[in-house]
Amino acid sequence: VEFNIVKFADEIVEEMQLISKKDQHIVYEHTGTDARVFLDPNLLKNCVFNLISNAIKYSGPNTLIEFSTKVFDNQLEIIVKDNGIGIPEEEQKNLFEPFFRAHNTGDIQGTGLGLNIARRYAALMNGHISCVSKLNEGTTFTLNFTF
Ligand code: ATP
Ligand code: MG
Image: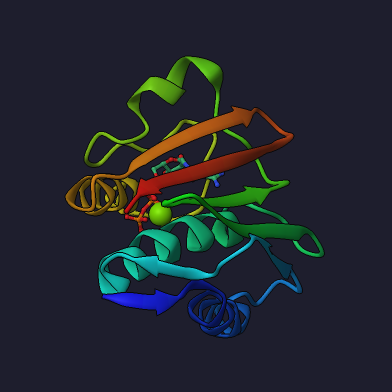
């Protein structure tokens, strides 16, 4: 399905802003010449939802979550960046395994399935998820698709 990624993202931000109860601010920015993409909006929504809900869950109050989309050629890049607890370097390789939870999550609850699902959904659309994270500084997830 062809759809407008900016409209899609604006709706997600509106929903996610309600879920965030810690006065976190989600800022969204789009770059690129054309905002139309050809992907499955439901699968994509699930991926992005998982990434933003993690950013909310694993960041403290009054922090910024940066969400961006970029369309260029037939590619879409989506970035979700937080200033949260980060992921210990030695555990980052396990991030997408089912039921994996890092050791620094403390009493933050979760099943450890969100990222595994996000990666599967991205793969169904021939996409790729990657992560860069620094413990106690923050985490950036990037989704890349070619359509
Ligand atoms: P759920 O299934 O409810 O999403 P979860 O959030 O624990 O549970 P995942 O979303 O799969 O599971 O994430 C796996 C683990 O990766 C988390 O438990 C956490 O340790 C780490 N993690 C994921 N995203 C972040 C993030 N943005 N900042 C810090 N740690 C993260
Ligand atoms: Mg999660």
